[in-house]
Image (cartoon, rainbow, N blue to C red; front, side, top):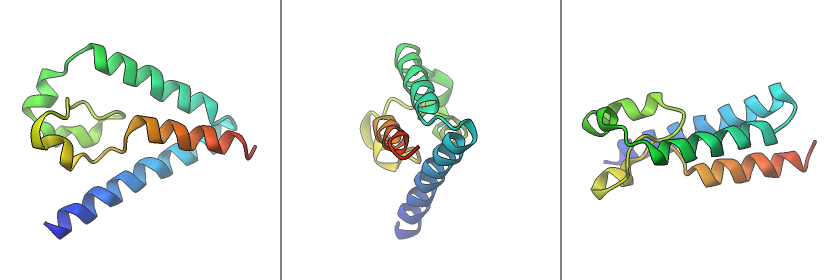
Length: 95
């Protein structure tokens, strides 16, 4: 159980690091923040039945494709999109 929690935390850390590197490459952290918001809005509109049936594939997605219903939400490998966007916009203040 502890190993699973550590693995999920590391995976979330990788997501934040990928966001940071993307912002550095683009020289505009608002651009990836905007892209994440657009992807999240689209993902909420279109249910992904395949991902729901195979939650192990969620880690290969940019945005968590799972509905988060039940206990599945507790083991998310993705940080909340809102937190990712917040961090990216915070970076914009440093450029």
